Image (cartoon, rainbow, N blue to C red; front, top):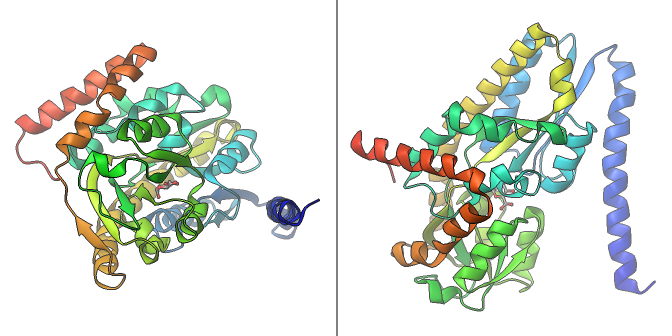
Length: 350
Ligand code: GCU
């Protein structure tokens, strides 16, 4: 084997072994902590991130009520692999719970596509109102039950904007020819193509090195990627194109959920609510802190382009998606209706 291939092979082997050891190691531990069932949770964020804080709140609540039966174990920072790996582990029941960006879930069920549309939500108030409306989200969240998992809570992941190494993005043509990392989702690849850039899909954990080594010219994400993932050290500009608001979904293995007794299920549901609540509250504080830190300590320059030309550039994606997947039309209409209600109801947050 050539040297490069051999080292890639070794890195993959070590990662697979690490996951194997965590999973099998935990099963052994179950013998040691007499009869407790281990609940494994995987996510790809740091331990300061609102998602991790939400998970700690979930752990605390469930263990305070059912600590004699369950041992909740949280694996942050892609310890169990990329989000796609973790969705597969959740599907098969190798782990019970994980967090997946809505983006990647569209490859598991097409219903999830809707929230990946750029410029779907008028503003964050509409986004939150839609995500909190169970009539809209529940059919989507349960659509993957047949594939082995379902969504039990949504987590805030803010607004996605472009960030780049060499020049700020002031108008859509500034993206022409740039290699921009996108999430591993067909909608995001098409969106980037419409913007005229070269879409480079990869897992979140590979983005820092890809920017640093010049493999890509930038990426797009919320402000926490600059600080929590250090991307602010390797880019110079953060441009508020506000092109997407994509929630993260907490997904749970279906069989595990179904086998819970109704009393235990009640406690887990309470835990999921606590998780959502803690994550949402902490999100608002964290975004502000991340923006200040990136600006003042990491010297990232923030700029605010007119978003209208960006919106118009990717608008064809709305028609394309609705044409190819007509079952999304009622959900799309309900979201537009929600925007109207919010507008009629008074002030909106931006
Ligand atoms: C956000 C989101 C993650 C996602 C990441 C990405 O950080 O919260 O769930 O993995 O973006 O761009 O991959």
